[in-house]
Amino acid sequence: MADAKTVRGRFAPSPSGRMHLGNLCCALAAWLSVRSQNGVMLLRIEDLDPDRCKPAYAEQLMDDLRWLGLDWDEGPGAGGDCGPYLQSERRALYEDALQALKAQGKIYPCFCTRAQLHAASAPHAGDGVFRYPGTCRRLSAAEIREKSRTRAPALRFCAPAGTVEFDDLFLGPQSFDVQAMFGDFLVRRSDGVHAYQLAVAVDDARMGVTEVVRGRDLLASTACQLQLLEALGAPAPRYGHVPLLTNEAGRRLSKRERDLDVGALRARFSPEALCGSLAYLLGLLDRPEPAAARELVPLFSKADFSRPAIAVPETLRLFPPQ
Ligand code: GLU
Image (cartoon, rainbow, N blue to C red; front, side, top):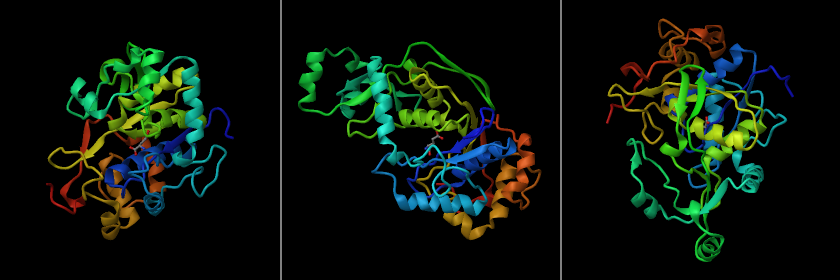
């Protein structure tokens, strides 16, 4: 294991489809940050959701990362002391964490149906996040027994009230009220699949991750993860959230669309051409000129990640905006 001062960063993609330029951009930022500090890079495959994730996508994304020149020191194919590096093989560890939370009375079963949840709560700020109003927090032991007869419950975390503060590596001081934004958030779905927030908090802690560099869509999730880490008595990594890529209309790039899918990009660009273009978008290069990933390491400090978003210029786009 590395000594206490070694930076340990990770890239933690979900194999739910081919990566797009935005995923590559986050991977490059996480990798450059670790490499510029002589740290250890981990790759963790977040394949918890069996409905969405496929092994073939995991193979593909590893091939795409290698193609771009982004390597990892621990993870699938590289070994390491903190495996397994596939979340689907770490379920027993998530159950251990749930037991620890249960022993402290910090989780409870929730029997609400999706329809009840939607009826009870307005979507948060139009981003599809629903605040859970705490309906099942007050169930008695007898009510829980009764409801368990007909329905397998989900599990929710009793999110502490008040704000969670943290200092983002790129954005500075942040403050989120988890209870006001999300309410008591899910830690296990009713079908037994562990929730993203729990798995990420447990894995970052168990894998000794000291630095998380990822997309800004997960900025508020950081507060949930910090609450879980604190409840589990685990140290918190530092977090840095990079701007999301958008098209010219300001719409976020998404895997569900064909926008800048890595397969399409690989057919058009060499790894150096694509890396150089990404480096230009991130502000590392003044012009989009070819550059290997490792050549960008000394330039990492030039990146400006405090921008609200990064618009991808027409020259990188293959498909017209919809
Ligand atoms: N697996 C998550 C995703 O692909 C990222 C998790 C993280 O970086 O914390 O969106």
